[in-house]
Each structure stands twice: as structure tokens, then as C-alpha cells.
Image (tube, rainbow, N blue to C red):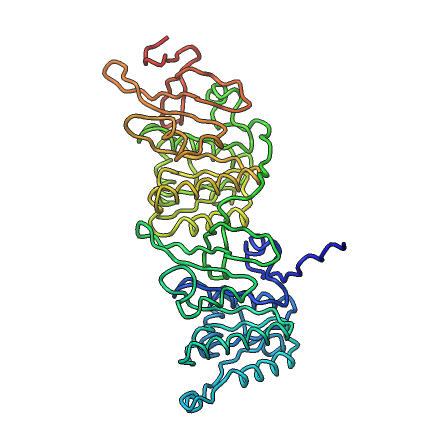
Length: 480
């Protein structure tokens, strides 16, 4: 018996979607995109059509809710010039005129619509058709049986036409379509559901493939963002890990600290610097960033707690002048208020800067602020995806984590990501007579023969200074 041919697929061009669909939409078959108002279903379908036309695959768009002018205007706001594609014969935008007298008389059918669609498809040799808000079309028929018959006629025509079809429809409050149109899901070969949820006052759009006949697909929910250039889907995780091995030593920016670390950090490592407020976490992170930039190694500093001006001003006190590094382009500071955006928006901003700036090192100050992005799960997803992307690219990462009160390993590891952290530096305080002194302990450092003792250190106008070798502290805080 001969093995069947693989299902032909048509790439959507939507960032991240083809990976989930394992190649794209089923070619010459029907895909249904469902979702409530504001979930992004129309934008998704429109982008599929636009990307296809840009790659030389002409398409037709039929909309029952928006005028052609409104569609072109909305698309242009994302940089998609539909009018230019129409002029080149790569796209046709249709807003059918409905004869309501025929509807009231019971004489209306979709045969006229199909004739128009067929003519436009032949005129531009279309390979893709998008029917936006097909549920609105079906609502023109008051009789449920008539609705179903007309929809079957549409489906039959699409199958015979050889066009790759994308239909959008609004869903009800429950998952799936509104009650009267649930059978549409059974007719389609691929069904994609878009949702928009609000959790702890943060809105998140998610996408899930409900079915895909004849093909494997990613069945999880995937967060996505509508950006000024289109939709970007940000997978929570990949099926396979592609982390690069740890590289050669890279200096922490201070010779005594390098010695305590067993020669510095490993290039490409994920390093956690944890401690209470005032313990010197940001100073250590900026010490590393300054040393890296002076070696002409680009460093991206993501600050969730201070503005660029506040950070550069504060670091002048310990003798760290970041201004020349910003001017020569070796350092870039990306700031954001955690509550301002959802986890996916924050993640996408960082990914885009990593793609554009191509840093060798990344500092995130502080990952404890990730909890303010949304739920605990959202913070974990944000960190795990960022950490995974950086490990795949071999970027050395310094994660600052503010702790308070009783310190547990889970708190130190930064919202449960300890298994992927390569080095943990714990900062703290110890009382010495009438003074409080800062302490440093390297809890772990993969691939390095690091010190396992507490070390006193100070911060002055000359930077960070560790005490001379031998002036350590035991775990009880007494000098040894």
C-alpha cells in the first residue's frame, strides 16, 4: 500500500503561527477563526491575507462588518498598504451590497455572493479567500435550517473552488461559536480560537488550535500580541531545548569578586544576584555592565525600577559612570513600568531589542518586579521564556532579585527558576559592633571552583571592594 502524500500547507507569514501549525494552513481547505469581540480574529485573518499577497499569492477579502475604506485604514495603521496590493492585482477587497428587500421577501441566497467571489478570484488568479464575519451573513437568514443549508452551500463551493479559505466568526460567552453556528466548527478542516482575558487587571490575548484534520499541531494556548507591525505569537516553551553550552570565563568587573567566583562568571551563563534592599545588587550588576562595555561587548540593561536618568545618576555615587557607554553605543538601557503592559508585551519589547541591538550580555533589574506584570504564573512564564531565549543565543544574563524577610531557596532563585540558573550570588547584612556590614556568598556557580564562604564587602566612591582574603564570615556571621 502506497503511503499517502503529506497534507499540502500554505504558510501564513504570521510570526510564530506557522510553527504552531507545523507549516501553515491546510491548502485548498477551510480554516475557521473564532473569538469574541476584541480577541484579534479579524487582524489575524487580514494579516494572513496580506502576508500571502506580499509573497505573490493573490487573495480576496469579503467583509460583512466593515467598509473597504475602514479595512484599508486599519491595515495601514500596521504598515500594510492594501491599496498598493490592489493596484498590482494581488488583492481584492469586497464589501457586498445586501438587498434587504430580497431578504424580507425570502428570495435572498448566497448564490449572488458566490458569483461575485468567483469572478474576483478568477480576475486576480486568487489562491486565498478570507470571509470576515461569516456569522453576520448567516444572521440574514431567520430560519435556522436555511442558515445551515446556505452555509453548507458556501462550504461546498469553497471545496470545489480549490481556494484556501479563512472564515472568521464571533463566539459566544462559552468556548466555541454562538449556539446557532456550532456546526461550523465541524465543517472546517482547521479551527483556531482567539481569546482575550483579564487577570489581575492585565489583559492577555491567547490563541489555541482546536482541531486540524490530517496534521499534527501545537495544542496548547499561546499568548500573542498585536503590535504596530502585526501579530506576534510568543510560545511559552519549545518542544526541544537548544541551549548553548557555557563558555569561557567573563569578568564580573571586580578582581576580588572574580576570585571568589572561581575566575568570574561563565560566558552565556544565567546569574542571579539576590538580596534585600540596599545590599548592593544594582551596583554589582552595573559593575559587570561597565566592565563588559569597556571590553566593547554590547550590554542591554532592562530596568523595571528606575528610569535611565535615575539609574545613571545613582551609579555615579559608587564611581560607575554609564554615560560614556550609552554615548558610544556599547550600553543600552530599556526601561518599563511593570504594570503598564502584559507579560507578552514586555517580553516582545525585550526580544525586539535583543534582535536589533544584538547584545552579548543582558541585565534585568529586578526580576522581583515581574510579579507586578500580572499573576505569579505570568511572572514565571515571562522569566522562563526570557531565560530560554538568552540561553539559546549564548547571552550572559544577570538577573537582580530583591528579597525580604526570611530568605528561602525559592525566593533566591527568582520565582522558581533555580534549575535554569547557573550561578547564584546572595547578598546580605551582618552586624559588626555598632555597624552593619554587607556580606556576599556564592551559593552555586556551575563550572567554576567558587568560594563557599561568606565575604564582607563595601561600596564606596571607588566602587565595590571585597575584604582581603581570609576575612570571611561563617554562616553564623562571626569572623573567621
